[in-house]
Length: 576
Image (cartoon, rainbow, N blue to C red):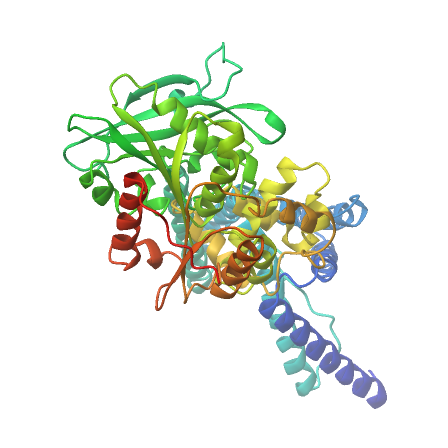
């Protein structure tokens, strides 16, 4: 019989363990991605406790289950450079093994116990497979599941301590000597199975919604080395193509940074009316960085890239040449916010479009671009005289352009789902520049999330997973200060700060939270200080995408400004 002093110590121990467990679990629930080290410790401790608990039961199934748990804990500990991905794999494997053991145990029981074991085991296997299929979701599940279990254990220990029960270290999973029956347990298993079914159906919908390029985007065996060569074309139909217009998909040669040859795709849309049509070279906004994110692949690709006024363009008798950029549609990587690759894709698309026998295009060209496309449009204007001197560029309109890249990286963490755009920057820069390291840029707890985000297009259903995950992130993805070191050097290298010979219009929404008006004003001031002419216009009450929507006051001004460029009218310079 325990002494009174032992009983008092036991009670205090239970209360202390319970309070610590609740506090630690609460921290993980609120900030699940704050520390990889903490998550590793929690997972390992949970697996060890589970293993000891199962081994103590003594039957053969418990010995197997306990051995698997202890082996999983050991694997996490000894795995070199343990990562979130390792934890995800361990938890998913443990769920699958747990489910298989439940199914095996079901052969020795009857009634609701058997039904509970079969339903529960099948659910565990399905959830484990889903965890393997959705690794970024698994990260959140790993963190939250262990956090919730800690809270449950903590509450149980606090209650037991208050009641004066003997010390028991508690368990992260409840004891299960054998599959138990009972209608309440069976109801819980069925509800779990329904959740798993919903997740499976959601996974099917998400996978079916992933855009994938077809064989049109495969390069031919013999690709010319000269950029701007039309490789193939085919008629293109879409609800976005207005009546009285014809459209084609095109595949053409271009070049990346340092002059490396590449293949790119795009769209050409021209009015059916006779006579040469002046060209609007449209550089689209961010759609993603994966191959399937090309506007010419997407169902509503023009609007996905923030082109909402193609009717206005065609009504003016102008043609639209809309490159996808390299790495979208065609083989990657995609030069996201990397000026040389973007600008060359635009210029070579215009070159290739002039080789379409069915399209009658005039020599006059004005470049439009929004957001990422605004960055591309500025670089197009800079590169045109040296890279494509034969093209006549009559004007460049950069609409909320991603011009001030260091400022954009600084503010992106404050924007809802900003981590999604940050993942695109990381993917583009680490793929393009060997001296920019992914592991140096992204903290360990956010690496798998960042890689998964970068594989999703903004227009696909699965991007909702990325948005929810980015909201759950408790702090930025960066490891240290991104506005420093070689990454900053590369960002500065891609700021479009050079001379643009053509008239330049820069338009900015005052309420833009992503490309802020302050950052844009600094960029324009720098151009003015360098002696370059700029027509800078701002629009009150307009955010990032609303700036270029059909009802924006920018649209009629942009059309009028473009008409003046085609007519050779002198451009306005708002620099002091």
